Length: 112
Image 1 (cartoon, rainbow, N blue to C red):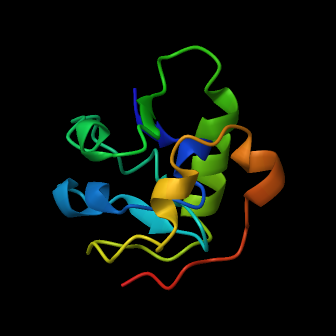
Image 2: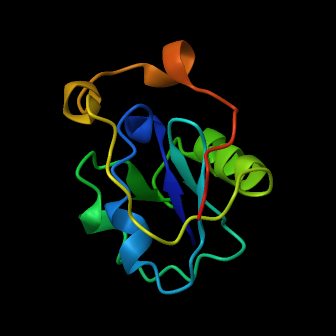
């Protein structure tokens, strides 16, 4: 088992999760974070820290797409281990549905 970041993170990118991760397995894209499933130790400390509830265990059904996306972009985006401020409009995007299709960006973030 591993944890994955879903589209609930897109345009929110709160980053509370990166501070509690004991193995620094988060990677930063332009408008979301992902978890490297090869590095995740399944401790689960990140899940309750996410205000957008974007982090889920990959054992939940229907998350195959997100596992693949996390794996792909964790190998392309820079590692992030320190929390920064969320985007100014993060709270406005927190409960918006269908963000992947309309707002996903494959561009990398700045990382640490």
